[in-house]
Each structure stands twice: as C-alpha cells, then as structure tokens.
Amino acid sequence: MQACFGEKVDRVIEATGVTASITEGLSVLRSSGVLVITGIHSRSLELPVTTMVRNKHQLRAAHDTSWAAWPRVLALLADPAHRAQLAQMITHRLPLREGPRGFEMARRKDAVKILLRPGDG
Image (cartoon, rainbow, N blue to C red; front, side, top):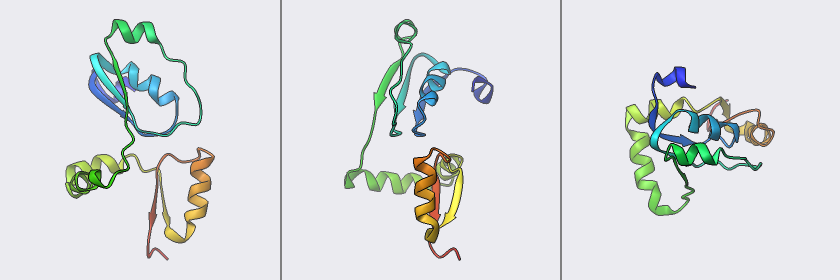
C-alpha cells in the first residue's frame, strides 16, 4: 500500500468492510495520523496498540445515516474531483435488476462496492 502513496499520509478512510484494510491503513499513516473506519465489519480485529501509541495514531469510527449528512454527500458527489476518487472504490457495476446478486456478492465478500444502475438493460 505504501507504494501507492510514496509517503505516509495524514488520513485514511477505510470503507471496505475488510478487516485487513484497517491494519493496512495504519501502516501508511504518518505520526499523529487519523484512520476513520466507515466500513461495516463482520469480524473482530487485533490491533497493534503499542505501535499505534508510539505513532500517536488516532482511530475513529463513523457511520452517519442521518438526513443531515446528505447535502454534504451530494455536494461531494457533484464535484468531479471527488467523484473520480470515489469511483475507484467501485469494484462492480450491475444493472438494478441484478440487485439480489449484487447483495449476495457483497455478503460473500466477493466485491467491495457495487454500483447498481437503474435502466441498464
């Protein structure tokens, strides 16, 4: 993961639901960096607490499903730069009619993020 960034980063947002991505995210954080976990995880995780303390890493969890969050979300999605970054998280694109298959893929962890497209034949 370090090769992707070239240097340590200030923030990591984990949104995959794959527990290994949390420790990978911690490995690229600079001293005093913040890792925000937004993914929903089905497994527990053992954390390298001593390393986190020595590096002054902060671990936060966020799960906001309130209506108040939507204006900000929609503004970020409307911004082409943010939309391009978020698009990288999508691993599969399926027509809406294949929604049940997409949910099954996500349940089995065969996909990270699935985009269901209405009106896609």
